[in-house]
Length: 152
Image (cartoon, rainbow, N blue to C red; front, side, top):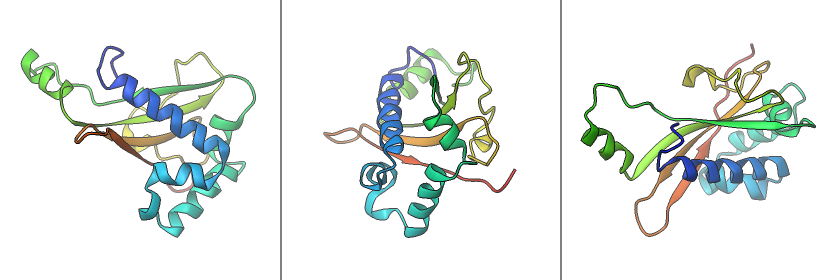
């Protein structure tokens, strides 16, 4: 996501709040950010496992000692769009992005090259969540989704 995007600080704040809630391992903190009352029991159990399983990319990315880093990935506007079309996208009321975390390194990667690779499979060197953000209404809102692919 472009550093100068109006969405970048919104997603950065949401990503920080989500990371803090996930690091707490406290369901009362992370469940509201992942759907609250609409989060199924199976999804709650899956998230608990991702936060506690030593083979989970979340354990490595969020709980390892030393430096942890994060990156926010959004949709790049096609170069063929005119400036006014790009401005309309930037001024939109809804957006979504991937936020990924990893342990160590200098921030250059490896990161997922596509959204499909943000599946949190065991063995991935990063853990990711999809954040959907809306500024419709009086209060901006967002919700995170954590996808999980099969074994590597």
